[in-house]
Amino acid sequence: MKLKTQLRIKSYSKETLSLYIAYLQGIFFKLKLSTSVFNFPQKKKIITLLKSPHVNKKAKEQFEIKYFKASISFKNSVSLSLIKNILTNKPKSVSLKIKI
Image (cartoon, rainbow, N blue to C red; front, side):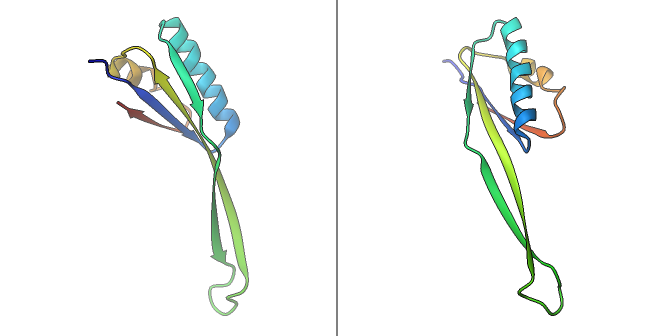
């Protein structure tokens, strides 16, 4: 039975995400691992806060958070320890999930 491993990457910066994916693809190419990359649509989260906590309920301020996602699937089987060793050197603005 072949286990399909998928790596999900999430970042608040599109440039950081694309640079990190290019870095990972270079490493996987050197290790002769065949991969495919899928980019997901950008997500927005809007947060609304009151400017004045006491009297003015109509005075509100809105903030927007954008985040970008991508997924790397491995076409052949990969050991989990190899992936964890590669992913130890990641930027702080990138979060990762390994899905088997």
